[in-house]
Every structure is written in structure tokens, then in C-alpha cells.
Length: 269
Image 1: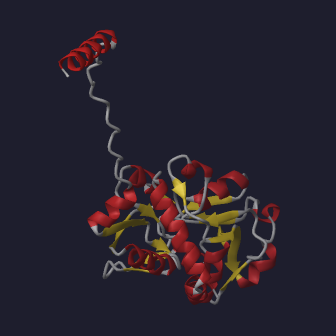
Image 2: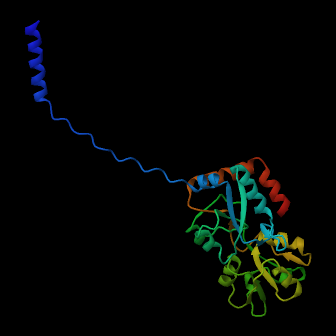
Image 3: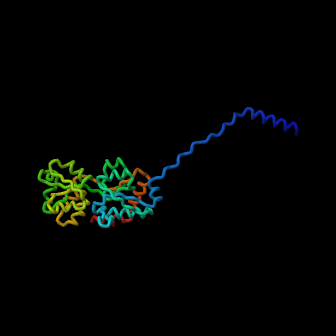
């Protein structure tokens, strides 16, 4: 037994001598904690902040007496808030300052009749499109046949009225070189200027012309089914993939369950 133990001890010593020196364990870098998405932030905060100019019927309109917002997009974002399990806070913005407010973080998403543009797409993501439309004239019904083409509109004696800072003004200035363009600051009462005769027409989104001709029987939308250009409405979102994925899925469910069509019919049919 003594000899066997001595032999094993000697063999172990030889193996230890031949074994490479142990390498000291080094602290491995830990992956950085994933930054919280805007979606996580909204849910944690318990409030979804929605920016709206508040002067665009029927998408989003602020009652100046009460400060309350109403309209198609107001009801839509209320449904979005319910899906998120949070309250909705509408933040007043304006068309000239919408992108500045958006980039400054004044709200989480922009709604209220926002058109998809490539310039805006440089700053954020757009949700799945809500509807397809384009610019078309609205004028006194008796003048409807006088303003069917851009050539008929672009004449020195034609008075075109636009609201400032949005796609309506941009479209008018890009396509009209001879007509007189007047910028009118109040998008709520702008259509009354046509009724009074202070302007001949306004070119705006076909959805708005359909709605405004219901409010003002003297006015008629000119070929709203065949607008001058192509456009889509959507919600403007920050560059946050989880938030966009949630909003798009929510919109898909709204359409498939019929909730979207019910609201659309309420405001646009």
C-alpha cells in the first residue's frame, strides 16, 4: 500500500508540472441594458400625449370656448389610448409649428389630419395609412364648373385662399403662378370667406371638402373622387419600432373588427 500511494503521488506531481499555468478569469463586459422604448415610456407614464393643430374639421377641432377637442382623430386616439391602457392628453399645436413641436418632444404622436410627406418622414415614422385622398377645389356651387382644372384656376383674376404652413399652401404655391393666393390664418372660418365672396376657392384635401360642403350648403366640392394629386393621411410617430408596431397592429384590428369603418362613416359619409 505504501509503494502504491507513493507511485500515485509522484504521477500526480508530474502531471501538475506538465499542466499549463491556469489563466486568471477576467470580468467579461456585460451587454448594455436595452433602452426603454417610447411605447414602454407611455405605458409607464400612463398618458399618451397627442399633438393636434385643432383647426381641421372633421379630423380634429378644438372648441375655443371649452378647450375640448372633437373629431374623427380624437375618437380614434381615444380608442388607441384604451388599447394601451392609458389616458389620452391632446396637446395643442399648429400646422406651422407641428414638426418643431414633434421634434421637441411636446407630444408622443401627431394626429388631426396629418398628411404623409417625405419631408415629415425624414423626422419620424408614419403609421399605416388611414385613408387615401388628394387636393381638390371647393367653391360656390354656381362656380363649380369654372374651376375643374389647374389651368382654369391659375388665372390672374382668380382668388385662391389657403391656410398657412401646411400641405394646402405648399400645393397652391407649387401649382399656381398667376392666380392671387391669400393666406388666411384661421382654418376654421376660412370657408366662410368663400361664401362671402372674399375668395373664389380653396384647394384642400378631398375629405375636408366633402365635410365642409355639408356644413356650408352654398359650397360644392369639385371632383373629390378625382383629386389633382395623391396623398394619404396617417399618424406621425417617433422613430420607435415597438410603438409603430403597436399602432399598426391596433389599426389593423380596428379595421378588421369594423370599428374604423363605423367612425369613418360617422364623419365622412
